[in-house]
Length: 337
Length: 286
Ligand SMILES: Nc1ncnc2c1ncn2[C@@H]1O[C@H](COP(=O)(O)OP(=O)(O)O)[C@@H](O)[C@H]1O
Ligand SMILES: [Mg+2]
Image (tube, each protein chain N blue to C red):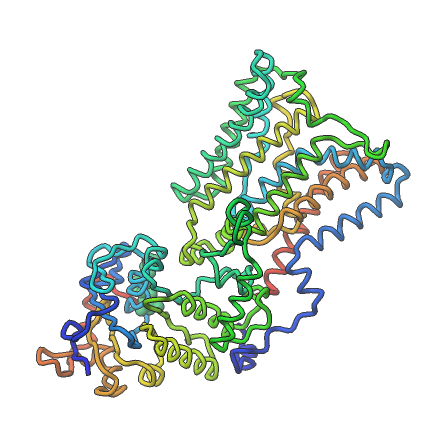
């Protein structure tokens, strides 16, 4: 607090800092900035390319963002607590392999699906357990988990990839046509439902408030009577569950389990979270922002492809965007102090 | 008037401690301290920075678990394993650094860790929070305590220091049913805001709740306290009445220039400085 502020404080009812209503709305609704950026990107690519605004192309953009969008949903939870998950794509890949291999071996498909989700949950439980029991930084723990899972997937796959023919495992890729022309998949519905459920849990339940509080200031949360470790553990478990669904999404999108898939899935999920306005410092952000962030990543990639720009330059553009988003986050934090 | 030693008091203390010890590595933050809070009183806890006041009240509020010693609530021994345990006994605390979630709004902070759900299926099955009810309740509590905050949905980080303090104090006052503890609640406040907090403490006492007030401000302490617990080098060195002692005497006890003799009277300590330095580890800065 600056001296001017100290002098200005005269009564308890006080001179609350007068902010413009608009900037307060933006501050409290962190998804607004990203949404504006998304609209801007869509308009830009619509104007600069002929094909972008095509209904089929837009549908494809959404389909392409499903796996990363789902991974980013779990990632949001972890980042909200002030952590980061480097192993989410790896957990997803292992789950797809497990499902595909079990299916090849003739296991009933509901069991297969459950086993895939269960392995992702088990990874989350282990990660969360290690993070909370030994108070280790999630960055380091998930880096270790990433290394282990990557190796485990390769060993388990034995240098092969496994095509999926099972109906249930590929079900999320099933196409439907809305109004006879808009192509949608069940995967979109599942992703949307998952986002809604977590949006609800984060904003309308005590658990959600505790997640934010733990990310905001763990010691304050503890002193306020919140079970910090229990909350953290639950976050990693729920994130694992979401990654399990991401694996199901992945098989719907590409019916083939490959140990080398989703190499950029993890970074893309972090990118989506950050672009969605969730703070890497924890305690601030929203899953709706992440939804927008995931769409921004997909729009950017698709738009740049349509504009004939090489993949590698797309990576460069995404990287620049992430750094800008983190810088904006940092600067807006500083202004609030 | 109460004697120098709390154990001679006629009533049973609401909250008391005997021979508490808490070590942080080589630092002994609480060094065999006693503590007694009587029903309905405002007890000021005074002492130098690093004397161990915050550590003492953290032990009393479950925020840290003492290595040794005993805590009693209404005469019954208790063991607090966390802040929730103390809360369940009706002990509410305003910590020195407030323990608020800065990004969350006023109402959320007031109910942090004890959120209310909607009645019926919505609350039981869907765990839906009663956001509106909590806002209304927050508005009522803050209004009652005279803490002016523009909106209950304002993030705490956008409040002034005084308002934040007000929210933390309101939280303790609203939920405390046995004891309210405040660790330097006026340290960051201006004159008028401090006066409001003092007023608030008076009102909490009028409701029959005893208050533990940690403060460096001697005029405040002498204005509001019924008794003064002087803390030095990790333990209680005196328990005095502001009516019987002067500010200078209390300051002498804090610095170690004076001490309570065997006859209960104050006596000068000649090598005060050395006494302070011989303590192993020792509390230095905050
Ligand atoms: N969590 C902690 N870890 C290590 N040392 C601590 C901790 N808390 C307090 N201390 C030390 O204990 C001593 C007493 O601190 P504190 O209780 O904050 O005193 P006061 O509130 O009277 O200023 C200080 O030397 C302080 O550095
Ligand atoms: Mg202190």
